Length: 579
Image (cartoon, rainbow, N blue to C red; front, side):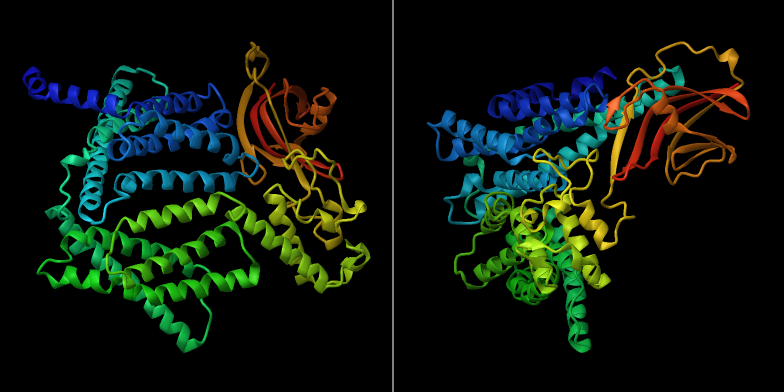
């Protein structure tokens, strides 16, 4: 065992760790901070929502600081502090202005888009003045190899350590917290992998700047996996296009996603094939020569699919992204077909610009989708002659077809789900408005236009008129219960649709053995527990079952509350003690 340890190159490992921490110190610190924050949230020392903003910012910061160091090393060797200062300013802009928790879906889209752009920047920032493909190709091929190798090492470490923990836990009854397995993964991912990866980033003077240098593994990967699959995927799209021409039909909406996915695979294959396109093997040469020509029918199909959906239903954030990517693919294809000097760095640069257009400025995906849907909503009101003196005439709503009501309702729900109705508020008279100036679009608030939706005939829909209230007991089971007083204890974790042999939810009741009803909401009210908003409370409720005493202790409960005042149980967790 000790002889094996002696063969490990400890000096080399120490040197690489030292080089990594001195060359990319801020990126390593970001990884350490991420590991700590994930640990705190996984173990529920703090709720995720309190740290989400910091976690997102740090995940973006990690590649941003790598890019900053690469820019410093290549072009601005005397301005290191300035470059890092600019990087910090960009991160602060994200932290204070771009991150927005109000609409989670859009927040996640922004985060993922900026994260992709940040990682993409590592691939080209050190080569923006280069006029050939050799340096950037060799650099990124090396990074790709290190990502794969680092991922393999991480997997081995996580499996090895977790296997040892599991063995100790099983054999010696260690009774470890199960989160320890996730802790191992988090520490390995955010501590080991950044140190390993940054230690393998080459200095630019070490790179071959004359010609792209492939290797046998990548050649086999490209030749026998990427190119065949790219051809198969494109043939599928061609066949579908021919079918549409024969049947004279418009493509389904899903086709745009396929076009984006297949085109991405094809472009990655094209880039990896750069080192082999001048080889004697016609297989590689033909792929590079004809790939962008073969992309033209796919782009046409892509445009037809996405702009048909936009014409019918307007822009949403996702449709805007798909449309912008279609434009990006078109520009890329024109460049590679017309330009005499083909630079592969154009690919990550172009799509990084597209990514920034998606999330930043008045033209971002969210703003464009709001304008588009507001325009659709206004056009539909005008088309149905529902506007009188610039406001909706409620007396005319019942005269509309069901299909028009459904379209208006869906359009309104688009704005409600995004917690922003400012672009359509102008159409609603005061008698249709149920929100105040400080109205918050959360689950404990009624629908801002519930009267309008009632007039459309959707008063039973859970999509608009049910607010949610959560109540939990922070000190659940923190006191002694005399078990001798009870014959049985039934733990439960129920949702409205849950089917349980012993206990189930039925509106405002818990039903025991399909016969005895426990009036939970009445019990909460009789114990002076506030049901008007989410809060914490001690929920120890005495009740009767089968004419005997019982004790209901709730850990947490979620209630659906109709704007008319009706309440019913949506989710409940707790214990039922029966005498």
